[in-house]
Image 1: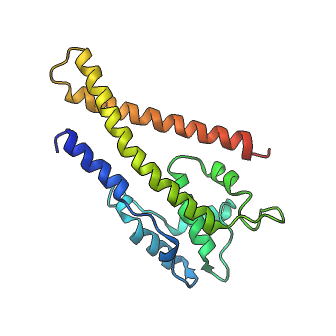
Image 2: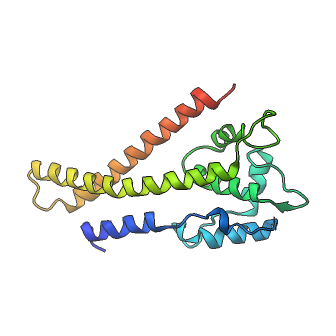
Image 3: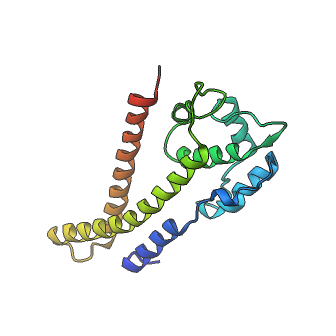
Length: 196
């Protein structure tokens, strides 16, 4: 695939076209570990970079439980609350450490939450999905702006065939944005959520 506007638009569409798991898709019965991993691997399989990658494994779930990022299963079964937390963990683990995820979840997981916490995981997750949908639209616009900015910059440099430079600059720009957003998330965690 050659790097051009059409190929870039196709890649952007792949990214924003990926559907999140909605609360309505979570089975209404509690699931055993194998059912949980199968559910996530089927629903989010399109997010894998390589065919060999796993979305969620038994080891991951056990490590989240041991690290107190996820509350233990109830009678070896995982509830809707577990499923929501696992969906959030999947989103967060792409960028921040398990320790930071633990800090974010401190006030919402029952075994850690102070008495009187009235945060609904369903409401939190639904709001996250709504906001994410808006961000996806902004992402399309931002990619278009960044592409034009880079093209103008290459023209100013006097390069006639700047496709490779354009591609490398786009990667560098995207990584820079991701790094800034990661650092901002870490600062919010450190400043307002970390109680140590």
